Image (cartoon, rainbow, N blue to C red; front, side, top):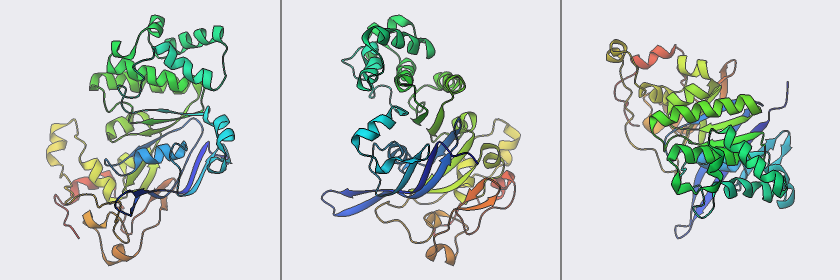
Length: 336
């Protein structure tokens, strides 16, 4: 078996809240791997720890425990100088194209900044590289002399993608890169990402909360709930046969573009809010909102286990029927 480009092992990120003296468990014991050239879609509700996990993988946030192996090397043990050498191979596209660009820098300066930081191009070649990047993301070369406020949100996100590509990385964390854009623009950005992946052989961790977007762009899907990965599967297997109750609930919320089918479906309405990551439930973290929860769920944390080849779920009572079982689930799940 080939070594995955990125392997995360038992990763945890804990923050101490000033003034409260309590710990917030943003990410707690997460493990997964991403093969070279693959896109892993990471989905879950807001506040479940997706963005923190992405930043921890890039070492922008210091993990409390666990390892991140990049091309077989544990980057959590690297010092500042050695990490700087690795960092050019892993980049990030941020969620908000309005806040992620410096308004006082031209687009050319923004794209050239990382080239200067990593000493990759001399001044003459730097301008040519900036032009190549603008060509790659579908922006005119004259954009190099303009400022971010002169562009639309979709154009700014193209600049953000170009900035990530500037140092020729192998791996990119895309943190909800289309959630702040109009739907018509989202498709353009997603198609651009796919084209760039094919052209440059990129590997992506694609963070999103829109399952339609994840279905379009991902090779595999990982579902996160309250700091834990609860299911990982191939895209087709996940959408046709979800195994975790939380995944069933997420998929039941996605509209079906067929009125007859939509009329027959029964939406799974989860009661209550997501528990606080400062005081997560014992046992299974989803049990307080799960209609399948039993006694074992309150005391024993379910391990992430392989239920079918390549299909992993952390549940004591996983679904064992095709994806149509979403229609058979109760309309309102009782709280426990």
